[in-house]
Length: 123
Length: 395
Image (cartoon, rainbow over all chains, first blue to last red; front, side, top):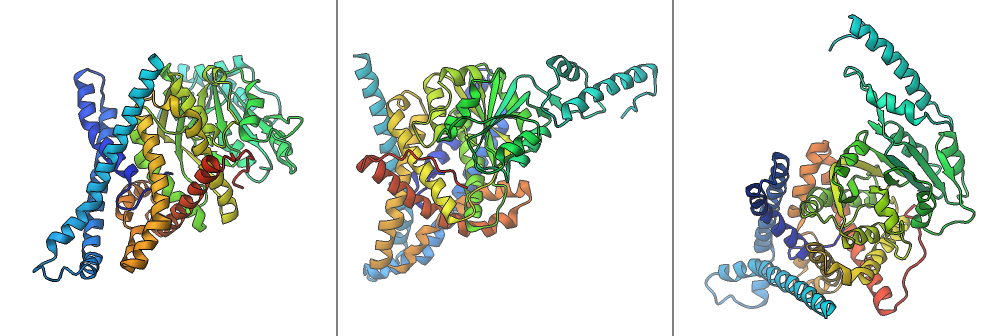
């Protein structure tokens, strides 16, 4: 069982994205005549789970917003703002954005190394 | 449902059924003698629809490596005997046990092999039996693992694909009582409900679990059997199959129930073995993995997560708690709503919602402990260059 960083775990994000990609891939398979009802059921199940997980992460984000944000805001002295909403929204979005950027970079590095290794092997 | 014997054809069917039951009784008898292939073929060809007679396949041999497993082995063998499709042969490798493992196996009428010396690993024990396998398919089953009644049948179907080299099923802990068993229960529910089906869709399950997997014997032999070069021989074998161009499949409906470590002493041994095994396999296979699409991404993400999670659990979060706010302690459990979705989805189907909910805190504990053992494994394997070679089973 791989351990994920709470709220920003790349593993969870990776599987979420690949699960949400499944319907598109299965559509392509259907057009090629390589799909069936069983496969579509599996795709629908995993997609539904992914959407449910996203909803769960949304709940966690709201919890972070209400429990932590005011504490952080007071620590960094932003009381001069009329409202801390823009700051807390940023705080909620930051882990997700960081995860997306990190995941993209990681996958890009993996593909780059794959190309490099393939190129050096061919040489 | 038509009652046999109610017509001329029914009488013929009844007589044939009685002949078949004689054969079936011979097969059930707990002796070292086995019914001939001819008798089994006759049994398989004729099955009245109104009689749910278990079939025997001549395609499958089950290998059960066992070291001091007298307490659990009988249940494992009985669960094989009550399968909807039963294996042709069951081979128990009594790896020089000091308890009654060999006696228990012999009393149940299975083939027992006892090597001259302890093989030192599960891979070694399994390879001892592999040389005797004459069937198309070989199944590896842990001596503490029982199966759902149709588990074998479900896995067999996947081998209609000629490219399939290995097939695995779902794993659910048999006992869910202690903190460690409960934590493992949640981990498995999450992984086998969400991660593994996605991996299977992309035709790249990360591991064909060593506790319960079925293999194409020719592919297994072409690989040289199971290797003891790492602490995770199942991962090594799976990744080797991918690099050789084979397919590995996951069948979620085929369920097994292993006994998981119940206390910290046994859990420590298992986590140590698994953590070292993962790092050893990454070191061994990293070049070859780059040629396997999707799997290279899965392994890269898993490695990153394991490293970063350890960093977060033991450095970043404690620092934030100390310097910024104690509320950062919630980071340890922040993703629980996300974890709960697949876990409860599976728990509802199994009618185990209460068990799942009460086991969540144990999951929080186990994954932190997991992080510790992983970072330690990285340190020992990669920095100190002291690979772990001693195989210690979880219990």
